Length: 209
Image (cartoon, rainbow, N blue to C red; front, side, top):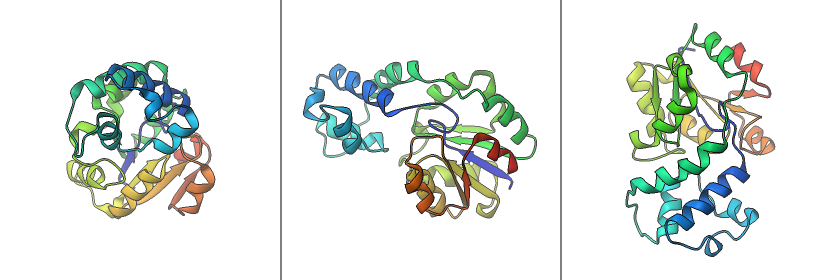
């Protein structure tokens, strides 16, 4: 394997539905809307939420098509990032993997959010692809194709590792190998049913790549 493409939130950085719900609640209020009109509780939020935050923004703001609002993402990450932390095993794992592979991050979060969370660990990555670098977010394979292009890597030499079905479908559509982790955001039984090339039940399983 030449290239490992990592999703970020849920894979290398902790996250939860509670953190996501809280951030969207505060964001919706800040945008002058009533959160109860969209997701009065966390159960309804889970049904409402889409991994493509462009779609979420359109629904909150009542747009028929996507209209970029820089303040939308800025306000979201002000609340969301404050609750998240890098997993403690990440530094050692990245150090090990970077000796054998090219590492890239493909995240639906902004590049600034990812870089701030990584700090000095950014040195292990050839490139960080944030949401602002693609026109379509996962499950669209645009970001995976970009990672292949900037690293001059064939699809057969790469793997996309994530924690949700959108990561799997982005990798599958780009014809790269796919890997899903158990400790992230997705329901494990549903992820297993997708039959990715690799299943990582614990972080140390990543070292086998």
